[in-house]
Image (cartoon, rainbow, N blue to C red; front, side, top):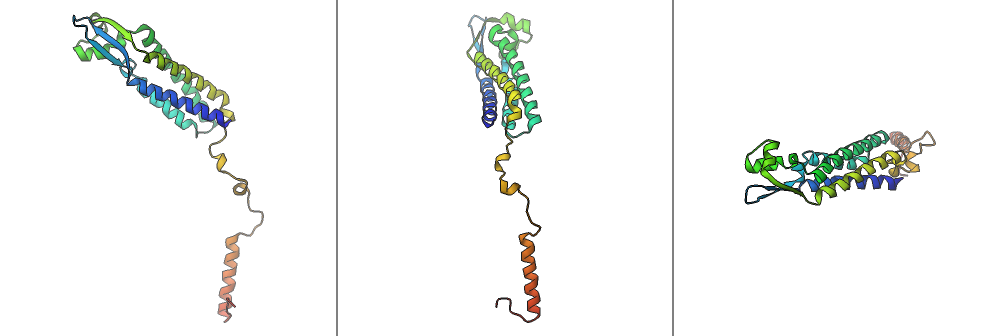
Length: 201
């Protein structure tokens, strides 16, 4: 099941990377109803404030998943499903509904006007870029990877098992050890010198 482990780890890390990259990209464009029709770009991190930290958490889960034991594989697989579902829901809301709350922080920073209802009165339109849908697809894949991890985790080989060999695992078959024999020879040589014998002869 080594391929299963590599696949789960690679997909999880890739989904986290997509989330991190997406958090810096423009998700929405808010057009102000101010006569000049100023357009404000809203990044993913502004539209979904938890996007960047949870994406980093997914990256960490993927990296750690390759070295942990069986119990933590199940824990990490479950966390991947949970985080994927949460982010998928938040991303879908932005992608399909384009709520005022997703652009409110950017509009407030640009105009100084706060409050969702007040911000809504300033807007003439909110349009979405492809990034919300791209990120939503990544979260769907993340949920699938988490389920795959839960199903296959028991069959994954241990990360350190490949470094073991039969020779290193096999205990000594006799009671004598090399350093004990060398020590005995050294004592015999010393006794011979005490009696005036030449140990090199």
